[in-house]
Length: 140
Image (tube, rainbow, N blue to C red):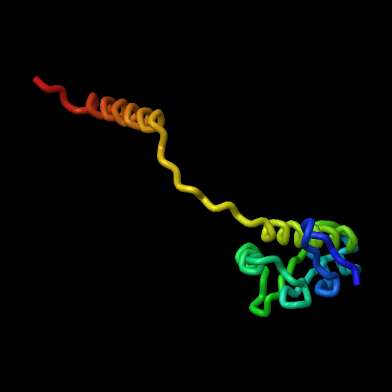
């Protein structure tokens, strides 16, 4: 059983992956009608893979509609005319999705606006106010 490395401390089993090859739509001429080049990659997130803390909910949010209710991520690749390149593209897209889910988002720390930014904001408001005041009817 081979492992596919995602990050330094996280890898997935290739046993949790399954591939299905189907007829692709789009360019390819007669090849499209004869050869099943499109790849449907399925990754079972409920399998033996142990995810790092908090990664599973991030993965579900990032995967969106690509994840089924059973926790299976489905990636469909049909950009290329060969099975091998479509398979590699599907694997790369899964790897990118998992790497993005593995990175823990930084907490936002609230900061106060600087004195200079407050001054600039007030000056631009005064400038805009002056422009609008000049549009009105002149006073006697």
